[in-house]
Image (tube, rainbow, N blue to C red; front, side):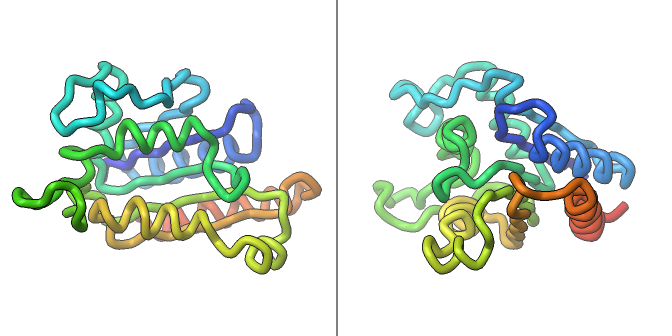
Length: 197
């Protein structure tokens, strides 16, 4: 299988990086073709210009590469921290520019864009790994779960990805090395069980 792994965290050596590396290692050891992007290290340009908004618009070559890769992916893994109930801006910009009409979804011919789109992504599974510095109970009580709504309902369900799983590890800022090792073992188990050899 071809799996796209997308990382959105600015600090090299962060726990998010460790999650992404663990996921890539498991996927490769299971024989999958992995395409990995560290958006910050690649300096992905997140700002969507108006010239790219319409379906079929000419795209920057780097954006076109991302579009081609996500369209060809059999599975998707996204790794990012929870910042204000959202992904970092660079990852939101990746969604804006890559999860686009004609690549990830389209509307029926007579639909002017006001209806429900038809998903075009061929991936059947998406895994999202998040980190947080808020305890889970307080996160749910105070804020609900906006990242679940965003990734499952607003992005992947509308783009045809039927199975979306998300896991959050918290509280990272006060976690001990043994706790992080346990979390990384959990990442490996989740990735390996959903993308077996």
